Length: 136
Picture 1: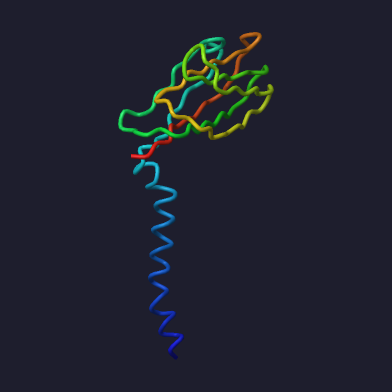
Picture 2 (picture 1 turned 60 degrees about the vertical axis):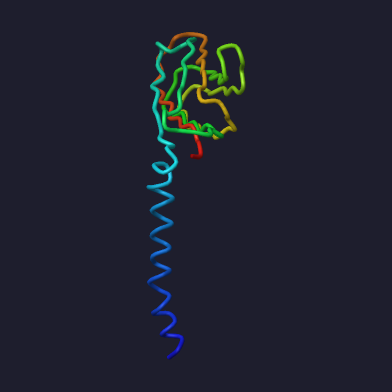
């Protein structure tokens, strides 16, 4: 009988903690920390060009950059990331066909320069989702 009372007393609290954790993790975390995902469409017009990615104005203390590249490409692509146009920090090579790539890298700059390099300017249908991760 005492165990039933304890279960009836603790069950609502456990459910509340579960709902709060779920809400924070899936809905509130990005809003609270200003880590909003931004999207860049990668097509043949961006081939062999340098593009500057910026953090949101309200973000502070950037410590990581999360990227996700999805879509299809008719040729191999190299994506170069850097803190300036001349300074290469990180690069990836993606094979032609279906692309589904995601990664998080340590990053401390408020912006990121990316260069998409291809041999030919064949059509591609790629989307780059990125977000600068900061703590306020």
